Image (tube, rainbow, N blue to C red; front, side, top):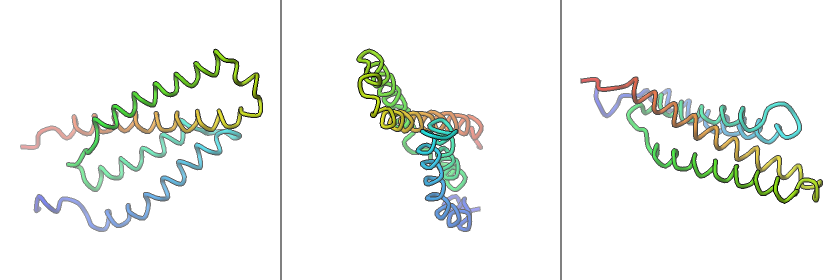
Amino acid sequence: MNDEKRHSEILEDILQFIYPLIILFGMYVIFTGISQPGGGFQGGAVLVAIFMCRYLVYPDEMRGLNMIGKLDKIILIFILALATIVILTGFKERFPFMNQIYNMVIGILIGAKVASGLTVIFYTFADIEGGDED
């Protein structure tokens, strides 16, 4: 098989249609997790499917792995800083009407953290498993 053409065009076309659906479902799970079961962790795990699907089509391209790793650490700092500020200032007790907004923001941050962390884990294992095929 030609090195330039190692993926299926049918799979590529199907996944181009599925990407927006995965994003919509992941964001739906994150946003409805404020008032229902689900939330950031589950939504982030759904969003990782985008990178897994991309790996199915282009197994040799693991773009931006270092950037995703850095983003993962930055999001963790934001989560910890936001939670610390809210706890130390008593923000939730002073402004109880802002609890929904705080829950939504923290849910989005947790979803992004889970998605970036699981993406790094997936690509790391995919790289180890792929190894040298010489």
